[in-house]
Image 1: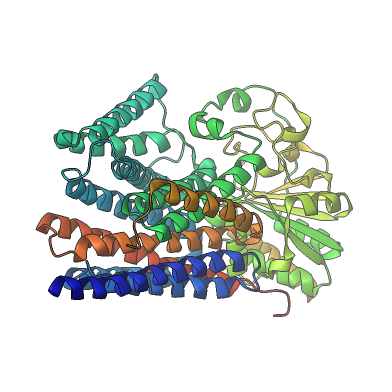
Image 2 (image 1 turned 180 degrees about the vertical axis):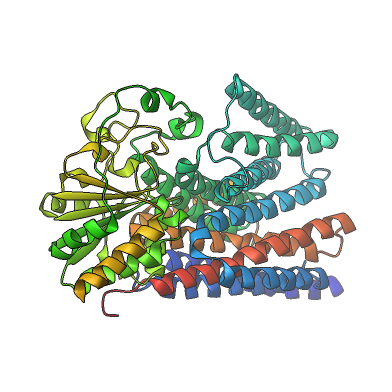
Length: 473
Length: 98
């Protein structure tokens, strides 16, 4: 009798749980759909939040979930940490925050996978689909966790941002990878070999570290996007292990999103995935900086630059990572406002890989109140540049390097660039004549129509605004 | 009983969701790539569902419960900060004159 009653309560409950997951999946899909335009994007966030709420409530109703104290504690502590993190995080730190949150998410996935493995390995038949899914989940979760931590450390400059490489590094990486796969197979095929589990976990964690060590700072946009993709795939694997379609859908959406962004980043650098992951780009530089004769360049003070800006009818500003480093976005925005007041038409040219994550420059400039219709993509701005009076390059280097276009032997040959050199006059704000990340000399500095404004991006932008104000008086 | 799927059913779901993902993400303006990444990251915190199952089960061992607690906390941090930061970013995107 009791059993009969139980089955009655369980079936409708499962119905409610499944319905909640179905609704949550739909809401997450809508959330991504609404991200297509800035007009609807905030609605997308609402849909995502609602989806999360429905999914969590649905799970709490699940008949297997009977103890709530630990869950409540985790949620409260997570919220206490998460809310201030969201409000206090400066916009320049968004890449780091993204990296660390990939680490948190992947850690959660890896840990749950571990618990499930120890729970299910004794009861499941050897080599069952669930065990394979669990091994995949744990491997991806743990390696993404440490890989993201290294990416975070590089972005936060807790460790050197240059690629860290040593001889036979790739052989070591391969060995660690093959070993972890081997143990994963053993664990899935022979559940009695549970004692090997810690070795597997450590190898997965070590592999994550090895994966990101040889990747340089400027390749971080691709790496962060790729880690985003891995975190998604790990969530999908968890969905396979638990038979949970909501997790599979979300993981697949997240996985494809990261993958597409990584592809866009690679295309914008004319490089392949393998080249980014294993190339150690930017490590061998001395040949181009050391050799050759000293070429002459022209330098300029803000005082000399201001009149040309004032008399221009069109100005294009090209921001790069240097703007983020010196937190110059607000001063740059002031410069933009002043020029607009003077009747100069100002646009910003945004290269897809400018900064440390996809869309980094857009967020910084939006923060400084630059309207987003002024932020123009590479393909759209290039045809306008020959008619542009002044281009101001702020903390960008490789993204305006003409040798990518003109010199087939250049390390960055074929990379799409913002053709700043085609403008009538080019002003380059830069700290010194040192070569950029790629370690390649930039011919744009020596052109007749170029002038260097040496100094910190923030200070120079500030001085330019001041000079423009004085001219107006 | 509902909830009893074969591996093939799950692979179907994955494949369709991946194709849908490609179509959806391709349409996102490059302007919003940072908030997009932040949003997908927040949505991926739905792994909290698995963490809740592990932590809330009657038969769970103390160690599993402790591990589940860490997972719930980590996923909650991601969900809460992820959605809030995405919204904070999106709030800043304005057209001229808006």
